[in-house]
Image 1 (tube, one colour):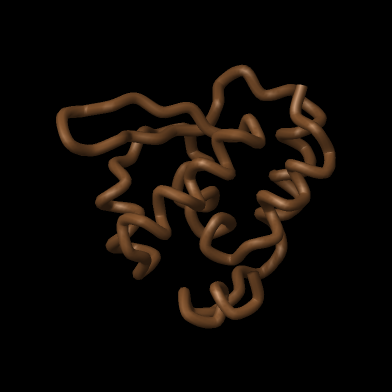
Image 2 (cartoon, rainbow, N blue to C red):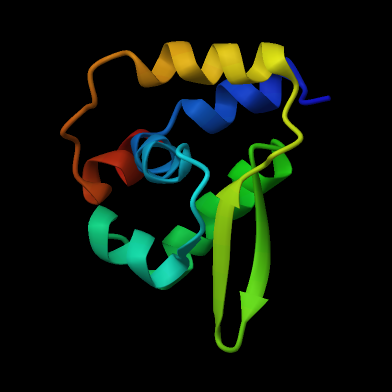
Length: 103
């Protein structure tokens, strides 16, 4: 079960929320694709993905030099409902730099 504080903290960052928006359909994506679409460096993207994974929202697998992520298929329905509600809100247009300033 995902802890409520970890879940809210994971959802509170625009870069992580953007990554979740890309992964929420259940398809697997390479971290390189997420980096490109979100304009984040590898180290920043890896840090953000680690937070989402720790919160239980994502699972990963290594593929040679890259890591591939996807939505955790075993998420509790209540967690899915919370994330779905957040996904229904308008996306922000903050840049990675603005995100880092807020964090």
